[in-house]
Image (cartoon, rainbow over all chains, first blue to last red):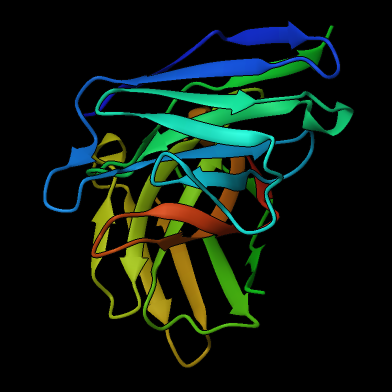
Amino acid sequence: DFVVTQSPDSLAVSLGERATINCKSSQSVLYSSNNKNYLAWYQQKPGQSPKLLIYWASTRDSGVPDRFSGRGSGTDFTLTISSLQAEDVAVYYCQQYYTVPWTFGQGTKVEIK
Amino acid sequence: QVQLQESGPGLVRPSETLSLTCTVSVGSITGYYWSWIRQPPGKGLEWLGYIFYSGDTNYNPSLKSRVTMSVDTPKNQFSLRLSSVTTADTAVYYCVRASGPGTAGYFDYWGQGIPVTVSA
């Protein structure tokens, strides 16, 4: 199975500062025929269902604020929150959908410092 | 806006079969892959498998032969059956829609989740 590993497990960032989460896949998720990275990011706030933020590694889902951005290719990816807001406190997950079984990272908890 | 709603018992006895149904409203079940994902208390997300509206399935090997999914297109519903449950199957179960080309799947719509406890 593809193993997807996130780092750090948790981080505390001051309001208005940048938060960066890393995601590493045990194998490349770049599909050569269409040059797309089969990686998504989700946000799960306390007591809520996860919400899709980004797919194809860098495409924001509809309605997602532009302070969220994703980048990377192959096996290494990052999710960046450019200016942390109070409502961004959540656990963030990356997920590979290159091959089944589709797998998630273990999650990164983002808190306010 | 696609809406998904899980339904089923919140308590299942060990060794019995967990059965859940997801109803898709404000949208058609046709043309998409539909998945179940679970989250044990305080833990991360585990994909259980998908079913295509045509009935094609793909299950997570970690569940071995315990999982079965089915679809009822006229009712816009799909279902999960997990047999021989143990306390390790205690989790919130989400039904979700998978989008993407072919069998690629990022999850763009989620149900609210249904907590299921396995206990005698």
